[in-house]
Every structure is written in C-alpha cells, then in structure tokens.
Length: 332
Image 1: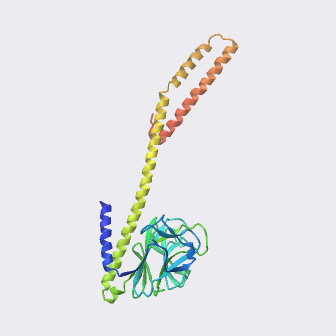
Image 2: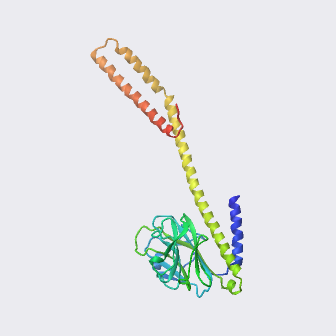
Image 3: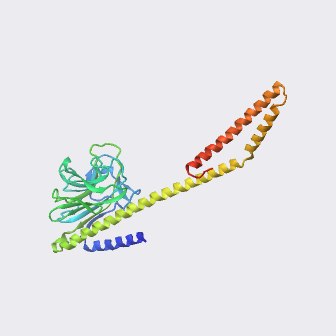
C-alpha cells in the first residue's frame, strides 16, 4: 500500500510540476545517436543498456580518462537543467553533471556529482574558477540514480542534488551549455563508470516575465519533492534486491542444516558402531585364553584395525555435531 501511495503521489507531483514548469527545450535519454554534442575526448563515451533511467539506454564512460560532453541550449536567461547520474559508491568516482559558458575548463563550468578526491561519503560541487572552489554537499552517497539540478534565476545559479539545495553562485551565471564529465584529470585508473541519463532543460523565462514569481518558486519546490520521492523509490528498490539475496542465502543455510541433521541421525542409527563394539568385547575375552604367538599377533592386529575404525566413525559424528552446534541445532 505504501508503494502504491508513493507512486500516486509521484504521479500527482509530476502532473503539477508540468503545469508550473517552463517549457521543455531539451530532452536527452540517449535512445538515438548523439546529435549536436561536442566536448573533450567524446570518443570515450558509448551507449549502454546495462543502466538506464529513462528508456532502454544510458551513456557511459568506462574509466577512459578525463572526458566531457557539451551541448548548446542557446540563450537562456532563466531556466533549469536536470541531469541524472548513477552512483555505484566505490572509492574512486568522479562523475559530474555540468553547465558551462562554452568550454570544459575550470574557469567556465559549474559541477555537481561524485568527486572522491573531495569526499568519499558525500556528494560534491564546483563553483569555479580554481581548485579552491570545491564544496561538499550535505547529502550522503548511496547506490543508485541521483539527480543534479542547476537552476538559473535572474541573479544567481542554484545547485541542487536529490532535491536539496547545496549552493548558489554568480560565477558563470551566463552558462548556455549543458553536459556531463568524467573528471579524471590525471588519467588515473580504477574509476567506476561514469553513467548519465534523463537530461532535461526547462525555460523558466515565461513564468518570470509574466510576474508570476510565486509559480516559479512553487515549481522548484515541487521538482525538489519529485526528485526526493524518485531517489527514495530507487533506494527502496535496491534494498528490496539486497533483502532478496539475504533470503536466498538463508534458504541455502537452512537446507545445509537440514542435510547435516540427517547425516548425524543416519550415523547414530548405523549398526556399524554397535557391531564394532561387540566384536572388540569378544576379542578382549578371547585374548585372555591361551593362543600361540602368531594367533595372539593376529588378534591384536584385528583389534587395532577395529579400534581405528571405531575412532574414525566417532570423529565423523563429532565433526558433524560440532557444525550443528554452531547454528544452535544440536544440544545433547
């Protein structure tokens, strides 16, 4: 029921957001060949069906050095760029959504995403123009899809991740390119794949020019709620998958316990143990009688063999009972 409520709530918020957002001027889900994209080492990017936020494909860079993609959106005085990236929560990750004034350089861009050189536990952002412009967002990393949003108002650009505003700046406020980057400046190996999908740009100029500032603010609040619900749904889906794995492991463990129990019961009811004990008792009685040296040697040889067999069987029982005791299934 909770899942159904979340879906209905997300549908309602999505419908309302469409009503108050500006016009969609760009939508990219990588379902067809790239058109109009430029950038740095664009040949390092490829399509993948292993991950997809929208449709059947996403775009990925499998750790092929510093590479970025840009696309012009023309003049946009006020608007929003939404970009989804996938986080596998590894130790080395530099997957960042990006806006730019036209170049992929620290003086021209704003960034939001993973930057493990800054923080391995939280998401990061970059406000330009140099290495001192990094900040750590108050949003912890988690496995799955996450949304970065750049909201250009009349005065500043706001940076949001998963519906949480993390910074604002006047730097590069005239950005007119959107994109994404694997920020591997030093070409060091071991990065997780940089994966992006579901890019959208909205023109909010009409809302502001009509004097309807409250509508624009409501639009951003609704979009933030929508993002938070989607992220929660993604986390719930990942949790359900992990719970399914645990349930399968528990079922395997239960079966192993049942098999060990059957083995112990079979050994306990095995007549071999009693037969060996009976034969040993008979030998002890016979050896007290008068025998030739050869006969005595033969009896003791048989006695030793049977003793070894008894010890082996008892050791086997002890091992299996020991395994069951670890699970609390045997208390005798």
